[in-house]
Image 1 (cartoon, rainbow, N blue to C red):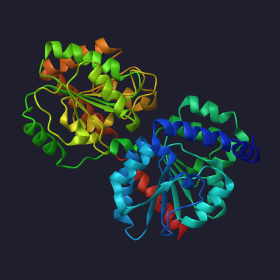
Image 2: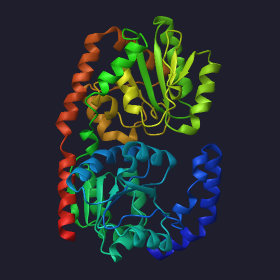
Image 3: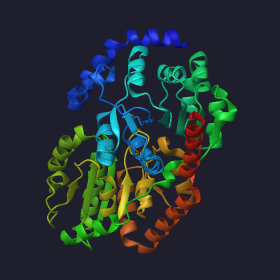
Length: 425
């Protein structure tokens, strides 16, 4: 398949895309809003000549945060525009950066929409997080002489096989990218095999290891626990959970309550459209639930705090003694286990962590992460960490060592970005 055929098929798929948006909006009403941005029919009034950064959803937006903050410090006169594809990603971008950045959805990869978007924005540089590559957008940047950097690039063996099925589409697109900053040597070879120019590919490591939290975040969390009168109360968090996972976690919590009657679970569904159904499930299970969105204090009678607020995940992690990272007891692929690790939390994951394979394997090998297969093993692991202070401390220390060993990717990436900006001038 070449780009012309790809574009034709994409135009033919527009009715299906519209139906998919409508179906998704039934569960998440935000998908029915700002549709004009997705086709570049109506775009914000942009300041031109700055940096465009694309982060497809929440995970990429979080990973992009240190990049954006560093760019704002180094290039205060350059406007930064962040695009994404999902309402949750949009909410996270707005909560992290507010009015300090320009923001909209990235239009679909249709030539006319792409042309309208880039003519309106006219950036001097594009940065794409991880592997969210669109042939027509990359082509439009090439036509307008906008250098594009792939940042924190990752490419699984499975994804590489998928891309390899379309060499006439993927190869020319990769050749048009000015610089690819990838996470590992294996991924570098995969990109080169697919058509990237070897001289443009650099192994920088993963910027996820350069995650930073506000210095006062642990103190704020401890102060809230004192307000709850829960300084000594056993607290654990199950974060970024997906459908089918919450029932398993609540089953584990029921078992924990039998041993630790004062135990508190902080349960954080990944997607806002599930907040209500997860709350209903907790009530159905007979749990006393407090909703974080109410800002009301947790009392001794509450057994679950439902994390139904936006932009507070790191703070909720900071409140807990033990962390479980969701999307891993079901076959979703897991989420970023470095978020609780950077807060020195003993961290657990289910068996399905393929989205963060390299990070998980490093943490598991070092003893900074523990894998559990099911609800029963989850109960046992949390119990051991609450009962064994020494084991918990060893996990914390091992996680910190992995972080320190892998940091530095952000500075290497910023060097590549700077070289592209200098080249542009």
